[in-house]
Length: 493
Image (cartoon, helix red, strand yellow):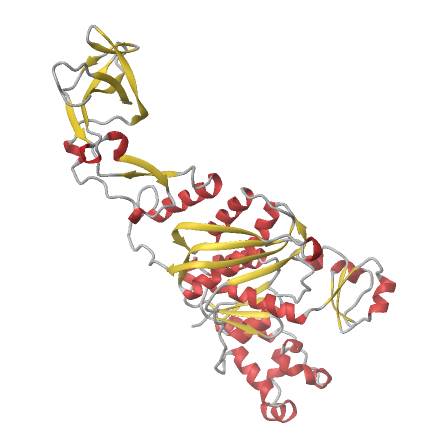
């Protein structure tokens, strides 16, 4: 049996950016010079829906007045639908600022209906909106319940009982005939269903019966699904000039919620995203600030991307306060299938390791987080170099193919430059005379570069039993009349 979640979003002007604003301040929304929505504080002052602007100014002169912006509200509704694509690919827009989600195949993935509803509320809140959710086995039934209040039904009989108690005004096809229906004493859907269908169709038309049947599951439903655009680029205007990066990160999360829905719908993962901040326009115009964020491993998780963007903004210096914020996906790859291992990898998966590295890079910088890049060379100071962890491993030089188990012990700490040692009675000295604990290991290399090198490496220890890696270097080849030089090259743990 299908299961639907209806998300009812109040149509608010875009100037109001905090959720649940209707319960916080004396605010009034006008549409064609008449009140279309009022807050609880304004209602307490006597303001009612349908009242003209002059009457509102007499009753509540200090109330915040806003005008409806239908085009921007439609864009906001589409942005919310795009963000909700991360929970199901079957998302449809409905009348009265509602979004319908067919979550029949998503319950197991997100841990059940309660966990899924909780995630949807979090996403809606990140968009800066408030919403009423309702669950039902029919889309029209969920749509009507969401406009009435928070109701969750998972079975058809319970849906019938909930719908029977709803007022007739929630049935949009019945609104033109509301006065006639109320004259008959028909105020609830249960009373409406008891009327003769033939007479009701002649008086109100077939559309009312069709909507009623779809709500109760007696007729099929057809929807136009929301389709994600082929490319992603989003932009929002900020309510004021903002120069605090933590506030900018909060607004960036609205864009990232849309990006997460778009990535899930297109089954893509992002490799590089671009964030830009727009500053003052006009005579005092300032060029936009562009912030690029490259990921070592493609990702699509909203929380992970927000953490990286937040760290990037915290380390950035703004040329001027920002008045708009934009986000675009530059490099994309196909999403990798989830691991099907029965038991998780100890210490986390490879993706968890890469996400940790990306977080460190975003916080400290790419030049502060490095990885080893071994080279096929026997000289210890050349056999390894360090490069940024953001450099792809397939571009690194190939290491030596010899088995490390066949090599003598190597120290964990290698000095950047070998330290010359003095001799005392033909023995090298470092704090105290050193005692050899291993046979010599001969390394000869560099002749192909015109700089031949001949070294004999030893493991040695001092009087305090600290172990060192030292070598004896021959210059120009090994000759009896040549006095070799001794160097300290590494320290063992």
